[in-house]
Image 1 (tube, one colour):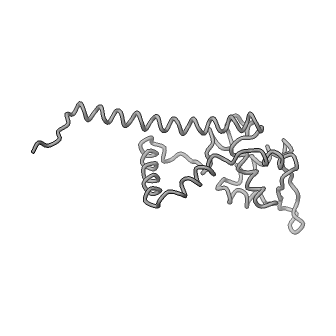
Image 2: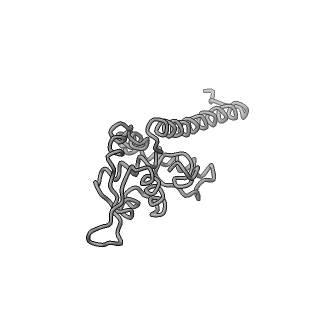
Length: 177
C-alpha cells in the first residue's frame, strides 16, 4: 500500500491557501462591522455603541450610569462619555434620583424612541442569536479558534469590550460616540 506523501512544497501551498482563507474571513468580519457602523450613522445618526446603550436603557426604562455600565460590560467612564454625547443630541435625559440626589437616572427621550423603532438590532445581537443556536461543541471549537487567532495576532493584551464596533468604544473621532 502506498502512503499519501505530500512534498514540503505542497504543504507550504496548502498552508498558504488556508492562511489566505483565514485572513479573508477576518477581513470580512472587520468589513461587516464597518458597514454596519456606517449604515447606522448614515441612517440614524448614531454609532453601534450608542445603539447598544440606548437599547439597554430602553430595556430598563430608567437606569443609573453605574448599572448601565455593568449591564453592557463597559467602564463607568466610557458609559458616562457615551451618555453625555447622547444627552447633547437630546436622545436621552438625566434626572436626579428622588431617594439619593447624588444619583443620576437616565431615560430615553421621545426623539430617541422614534429612532429605536426604526433602527436595526446591534450587530452582536444577530451574532449572539446565531452562536447560541450552535451545538455546545461547535461553540467551544469557535471560541478556542478565536482565542488562538487573538494570540497569533499578539492581541491578548488589547483591552476590549464585548461590543462589535470600529475603533475604540469611547475614543474614535472623539465626536461620534
